[in-house]
Length: 328
Image 1 (cartoon, rainbow, N blue to C red):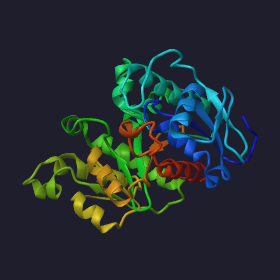
Image 2: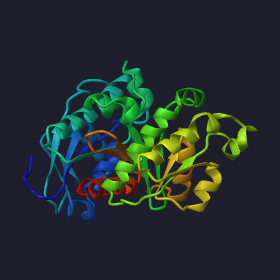
Image 3: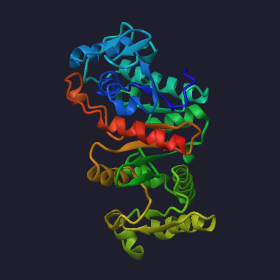
C-alpha cells in the first residue's frame, strides 16, 4: 500500500446487484475526494465492468486498477467471489450476498493489518447476505465480530450536517429492541458516544437521550422503562463524567437541536430525523471498535441498480466524514 501521508481508505463496493458499485465509480471521479485521500477499491473487476457498461461510464477497469480519464489509477483489490455465478441487477441472491460480505471482510482485514486507515463500504442488502447462510444484521455487527469486540459495546453513529445520532439497538424488530434494552447497554452506548465525540474534537459535548415511550413515559402513565432503567443509565453516565441528559420525549428532543449528539433507543427513532433533516447527506460510522468503518445511511437501491440513476453524494460525504474522524 502507499506510503503517502494522506489517509488511505478501503472502499468495498457493497452488493453487486445494488447501486454500490455505481456510486463507488462515480465517487472516483470527484476531485474533492481524490485530492484528500487515497482509495483502494475492494470488489471484482467483472462486477465493476458490468456497472460501467450499464451506466455508460468512460472508465476502464482491469484486475489491478480502475482508470478514470485525467486522474491517477485507483488500485483494485480484486476479491473473486462471483466468478461464474449468475446474478442480475436488482435481484436478491445468495451469491451477491456472499460477495458483499467478503468485500467488507477484506476491508476490515486490511484495516486490522494497518494497511488502510479506514473503511467506507457501499451499501449491503441484508436479505442477500442472510440468504447466503450468514447471520448478518448490518455492518456494525460484522465489524464487531471480525475485530473481537463485544457486540454490546459496538454501535452505529449516523452523522449529518444537522444531527449526530447513535443507535443503542439497530437492526432488530421493535419487540426485540425493547427486550434487549437495559441499563448496561444504554450506559455502554453513552460511553462509546462520548469517546467518539472526543475523537471528533468535541471534548465538552452534550448528549441528549431519547425516551422509549411517548412523552418519555409521562411519569409511568405510558410505560415504565424510563423509570426502571433509562434514567438510571443516564445518571450512571453522569457519575463517570459523561455529560448526558434525559430521557426526553424524542420528538421534542430532536426539534430543539440543542445537543452535540443524541442517543436513540431503536432504529427508526434515530434514522427518521437524520434522513428527514439531511436527505442523501447522512453517513454511518461504527463506533466502539478498533477499526474505523463507515458506510452510507441509505440502502442498496435494488430498484434503480444498473440504470445510471444513483447519486454518489452520500458516499462522498461518508468518505469525508471518516477521514475527518480518523485524523482527530
